[in-house]
Image 1 (cartoon, rainbow, N blue to C red):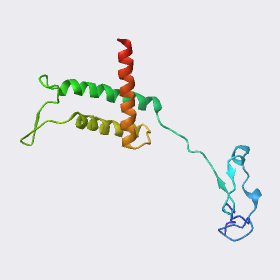
Image 2: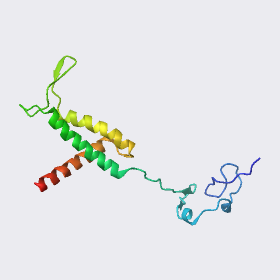
Image 3: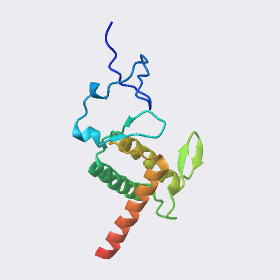
Image 4: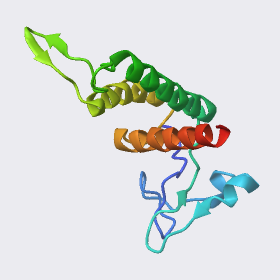
Length: 146
């Protein structure tokens, strides 16, 4: 039978797998790992390893900008020239005038799926707020240029 490596020990340095006294020298730690060890009172020593963040941040920002451009395109395409409201659509035999917020929410939902694929970890509500903040900044830049 293989010898137990005593990886899991309790506060008294007793192995949780086999019940034998644990040997602290059995698993040598590098100097970097020694700084990551945290002993909690009355708990098993834990190695705190940071999880790498692998999101494409520039890609997420570009996606937010593309969402804004798509919304501006939809504003022009869907606008009724007579009333400045969205065009009336016939859906299932019924006449329907979508609201601007419906059009916005459809665009946000589509772009959110792309943001998640790029590594965005926040909920849809936060993505909506992020894109709205980007829209406000774009409008501010546009007004300053004029």
